[in-house]
Image (cartoon, rainbow, N blue to C red):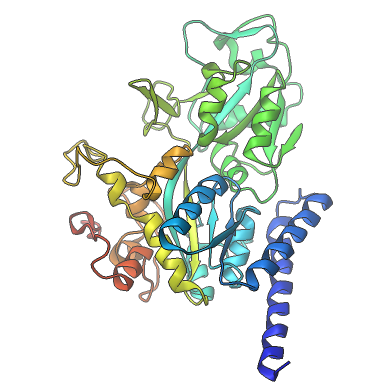
Length: 440
C-alpha cells in the first residue's frame, strides 16, 4: 500500500470511530435507547458505510419520517440525473452527527434545527452548526403531527362533534391535558374528555405510546405538544409504522404520528376519521383537523397548528458538496408546486399560477404529496424563514412579533443564495418575495 493510501485508510477509520462515538452521545441524551437498538444502529451503519465508501455513491442519512419520501425522490433523481444517493434512515440524531463530521453529504431531521444556542444541546443549533462546522440548514417540506387514538371499548364520540379535540398546545390547556394523560396512570378517558365522550368505556385508563429515542417526531411532541421530556409511557414505537400498528390494535390507546399516515388511519375500520384529534390553535376558536376534504380529496389544512418543518442540513466543506447541492436544488425548488396554487397565502393572486401545469414524477413536490407531506412555495413561511436571501437569513425574523432571531454572522449564506450562485439562471430568485428587513 502506498503511503498516501495508508494515510487515507487511517483517516477513514478515525472518521468511523468519531461518527459512532458522537452518535452515542446524541442519542443517549434521551436516556431511553435500548442495547438491541444501539447494536442494530451500529451494524447497519457499518454495512452501509462500507458499501458506499467503495463506490461513488452520495451518502445521506437521518429521519425515519423522511425515509419514504427520500426513497421515491432519490430513485427518480437517479433515473433523471444518473446519480446514486444512499439514504441511511437511522433517525434525526444520526443526521446531525453524520453531517457535522463529514460522514454524510447531507442529512434530514423531522424537526427544526434550534435557532439560538441553549445549554446542553450538543451544538445542534443553527448558528453553532455554521460557526463550528460550516454546516447550513434548509427546509424542503412541512409535516403535520397527527394526534390519534383508539377509543376504549364501549365508548363513542359525542354525535355533535367530528372527533375528540384538544385546546391549544405550545403551553396552553391542550399541553396540560396531554401531560396529565401521559403522567397520571390513574387518569381516565372520561376525566380527560368529559362530555366529548359517551358510552360505558369512559372509566378506562389510557394506554400511551411515544416514539424511540433520537426521533425528530418525538422531539416535536415533547417540545410543542406535551411540553416535557419527563413522562412515563406504556410503549415505545420504533417508527411511524409501529406507532400506527400499536394504536390500531389497542383499544384505549393514544399516540402521535406523521401526516403521511393520515389516509391509512382513515381507511382503517378499527380507527377511521373519528380517531384523529382536532386542535384549537392560536387565535382560533373552533377545533381544526390536520386535513380538509376538497372535492373528495384530502388536502393540508393550513389552520392546523401542529406543524413542523422537514429540515435538511448540508456540510459546505464536504467532499461531495457540489453533487449534494445539485440534488438539494432540485428537491428544494419551490416553483413547480407554486404553479399549482392559484392564490398566495395572504389570499392575493399568485403570479406564478399556471392553470395548465400539472406536477409530474420529475418534480420533487410530486413525491412529497404522494407520501403525504406538503411542499413549499416561495411565499411559504418555512421557505421565507430558512431558505431565502442573505438579508433575511441574517435577521432571522419571519414576522414582526417573532421573539427570537438568530442573528447570523455576516459571512452566512442561505441555501437558496448558494443555489443561485452555483447554478446561475437555472432557478428563479423570486425577487418580489425577498425579505427586506423589518420596517422598524
